[in-house]
Image 1 (cartoon, rainbow, N blue to C red):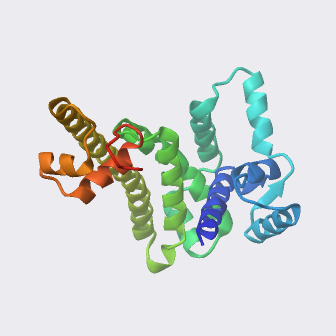
Image 2 (cartoon, rainbow, N blue to C red):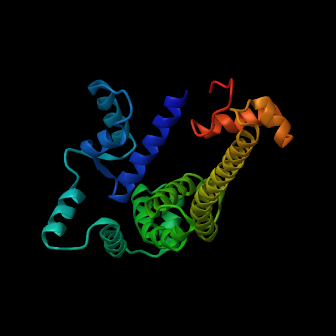
Image 3 (cartoon, rainbow, N blue to C red):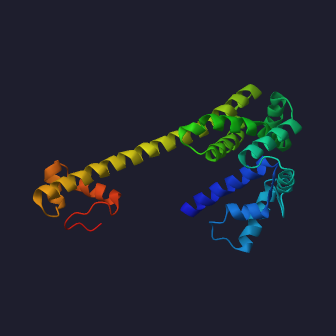
Length: 250
């Protein structure tokens, strides 16, 4: 079950990568994204067929990769800044009024959907840049924003006007990035709480061993701290090898 979930997430990542480059992706990039899955050549062949059925063109070498190589040889900026510059170029190349694009997307026009995606990608990068100071990597925020964009585009059938669709897209993008920031913050706070508990227990062990002049047991530490045995053992498991008590095998 876990592998199926991971595989579905990887297919979504492949779709995002393809959408960024006008609905195409190279076989090498597909293999790189799926490198952690136990897949055979037959599996990859089926994946290529599936993507083609989703109107994603699978190429030997992606045209945008060649563009990037030419840009590098010309001394243009690489990395994330180069990515953003390319997105801005794509948005300019495919410029069309968002209202008109949304109307076409609502009618199921896949070409309009691809151009709408291109027009939103620079906005996602800008929004991610504004949130990058919140403790999440800029690249991760962009990825979450891209996934939010695709999620929004898959649910536009519930709205009856381009304005409502536009608002839904922006809200979904912002919510996806906000969830990433919140999740990261909660993880940091949880990690900090664990470290604080481990340090507190470690200090108590040192003080008690100094007073008793022997290696203390979990029962002695429990009485000393007035803390339940299971709570102490939970902290011991979180501490790894940092804290050792008499008779405790972690």
